Length: 324
Image (cartoon, rainbow, N blue to C red; front, side, top):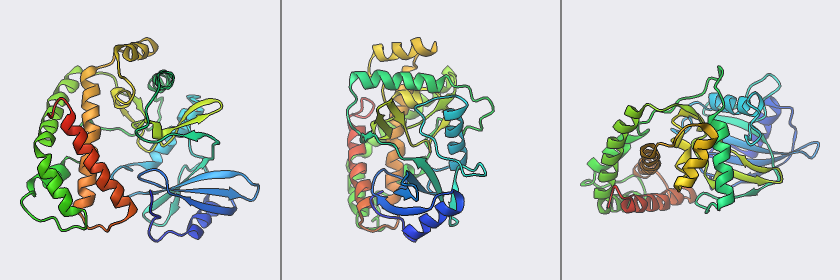
């Protein structure tokens, strides 16, 4: 997030780190990176660097942070998946610490690694490595791990329905509200068509009744770190049991890619499910951005990101074969 969280100071973060972990902060700097969480770089009394994340527990994309972080820890330890960057538990075995009633704190080792960004291209070598990584993840047995689950349905369909139903009324939530209404009028037809195709695919994927596996949810370049030991996958907030295509649509671009995954897992890739999850990502993003921009908001660096992303997402939906 570009803007710091309201009501949370560096002192609050340092105090929470000292309370939950044996970390005495000597230096703390806010990192305006990522989307959905707030991040700091902390340096402790030994000179060790840590990556600190503060999450808003009321946010719709954080349904069960504790269960997600416990899953990541067990994937890194019991399943021995070395590409999983898991949080550091507290001395009493907790994976998150409290920071007021609405926010939670997670602590990660700081990795000296080259970071990529959401939307960066993936070359052939990285694509193969990510497919192999996902094959290993999807082959990990839950074995009693209380992994969160994610339904196939859209997570925020009502926000799209409400926005489409309110196109004839002024949107007064803030500076981007009326521009968003005019944008949605322009893209109303492709949005409705994309939603209709999603519903049709939903029935087909349900009927196929393929396996549900442990999925990361967002294995895009922005969540990959390039270390000397290889690629590492971060940001496990959205980990969940779901069809493997929830992850695969990010990297499967050809029959060769699908064959590579099938050879590693013994499972074919469901092309309908790939299309469903590709559409679902765009529709869920559209719903989240619309809910934010239609609601009360100010013009900030973060709402500007949401406004730009809404324009890009609707433009992409308009170019989708389902929504010409």
